[in-house]
Structure formats: structure tokens, C-alpha cells
Image (cartoon, rainbow, N blue to C red):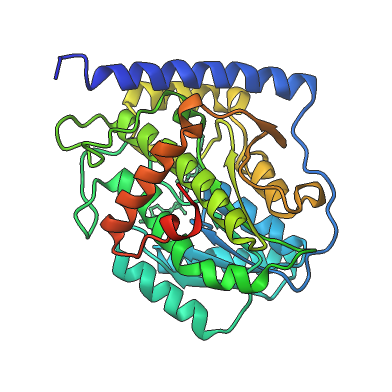
Length: 335
Ligand SMILES: NC(=O)c1ccc[n+]([C@@H]2O[C@H](COP(=O)([O-])OP(=O)(O)OC[C@H]3O[C@@H](n4cnc5c(N)ncnc54)[C@H](O)[C@@H]3O)[C@@H](O)[C@H]2O)c1
């Protein structure tokens, strides 16, 4: 381990952020950010993790506005109930609920799924949105590095536990959809299969980028699995861009200062940041389309390493071991 090991990921993430901000600025002035009009989603059910603030809140609010029944999955009861109240008042949709789910605890995720299943709802859209960024080195309840545990492993387990309902809900004319919110930082992320928990060298930026890279690899593997089974469920990845939310609360103080002075110009608002998620959740042109990386409502290429099928399989197998579920890949996809 060299002295540069923890610093290099930070330099890469900051460089990446500057390039995204510049292209976002161009996009804003050339085309603007606007949500296309969508038909009513009445009768459809969506789960949005982390829907109590930021991009998740805006996503939940817009889906509720379209008539969807929205379940906000979050780890803060009071803020969750507050978000539900606000969305109900703003959208006049009474079908908005909060269900407790702490993605830092496998037990809590299992409990959430149990509670959700008790309700006997279908599930048309699962949005894996919740996340934490650049936090100091900490562990989840189950002992995983927190960014890898919450951002990636938590969603890996949640999605796997909800797959049966998604498969039952999806049909040939109306596939159920799984959207996973990744980030441009995945382009500079490195997956260290020998040290996924960053025990040997922890960098807040590196661990965040690794978790977001893992989410892309997971989604592509999941899509191949679903397609091989012939199930009517699709899995896609969403990149919201650079958005003015609480996600930045752990960044370096100078970054916070620059952000507070420039975010009005350089960052998207949470409503703007949610547009790609909403698009991926309901756009008719994405019916039956999976395995894509979406940015500004367009399918773009993710980093080269995300298409490495061997790495996707290895990560999937290791993740199954870590969260304690059965690995079905080898049975479904011939290797
Ligand atoms: N804001 C950006 O610039 C940006 C850029 C790229 C990607 N993203 C991604 O967008 C997603 C939403 O982030 P945001 O910007 O709205 O940030 P945010 O901080 O406003 O929202 C994050 C949400 O995740 C929830 N969360 C955190 N830990 C949790 C846990 N243990 N269990 C359950 N929920 C938990 C929070 O309660 C909150 O609702 C994240 O996945 C983030 O990585 C954000």
C-alpha cells in the first residue's frame, strides 16, 4: 500500500465530478431538464428506498402524482411519516405509505420484506435509490464496510427477497421493473474482489465508487438471470447526475463550501435529479428493455469493466455468501 492509495480514488472522483458538472451545465443551457408527460400509473405499486428525502423523495412524489401506490422504504420513521404526509398533501394520492427498512441491517431488510408481503400487494417497480457517500470508515450491524453494505449489499438482498413478487406481478405486456441508482463515480471505481470491505486500505471516495460499480455489475447480472428464466421483469441502472442533496454532508469542508456557493448553478435540483429514475420507472419505450445504463433519459455505455460477465458472476456468488442466500445463477445461466 503506497501513500497515494487512499488519495488516488479521491482525485479520480473529484476529476469525474468536474467533468459531469460541466456536461450537466451544457445540458441545462442547451436543452434544459424536463420531465416528459406520462400516462396514469393508477393500480401500479412501487417501492422507493430512501424516498424520504433528496432524489428518492422527488421520485416517490412524481410517481404518486402519476397515481401509483408508493411505499417509501427508509431508516428514519419520523422523517418517513413526514414525507408521506407531504406527498399525500401535494399529490392528493392517499396511497402513499412508509415502511421501516434499515439497509445497514440484514435483519431489518428481511423484516421489511415480511411486512410488505403481509400486505399482499403486487410490485410493479422497485427503485433501489437509498445511499450514503464518502463517510468515515464504519461498519453496518452485520459488520460490512458501511458504503458497500448499505449501497450495494442491502439492495442486493432486498432485490433478491422481492424477486418472487416482481416475477408474479410482471406480464408479457407489462414487465415489472427494477431500477438501481448508481452514479458516474462507478466509471472511476475499482472492485477489489480480495478486499470488498476495504479492510486493507480505506478511502471514503474509493469505497463509494466501489459500491456504485458493484450496483452496475449486479444489475447486469440480474438482467441476464431474469432474461434466461424468461421472466417478465427487467433490471436497469440509473445515473442521476450531480444533484443538490444531503448526500454531500460527509464531504471535505472546502467541497461543502464550494457546493454551497455554486450549487444553484452547477447542481441539479432533487426534482431534476429524479427525472431519469421516473423515466426508467414508467417510460413506455422501455417496456421489456433491461440491462441498460440510463443518463439524461438516454441509454449510454457504462464503464468497460461492468460488462465483464465473469466479474459479474464472481461478485454475485460472493454477495450471496455475504448475505446468506442461495446462489441460483449456475442453475439458470449456463456458464
Ligand atoms: N446527489 C447526487 O449528486 C448523486 C449523484 C449520483 C448518485 N446519487 C445517488 O442517488 C441516490 C439518492 O441520493 P440523494 O442524493 O438523494 O441523497 P440523500 O442523502 O438526500 O438521500 C439518501 C437516502 O438514503 C437513505 N438512507 C441512507 N442510509 C440508509 C439506510 N441505512 N437504510 C435505508 N435508507 C438509507 C436516507 O435516509 C435518504 O432517504 C443515492 O444512491 C446516491 O448514491 C446521488
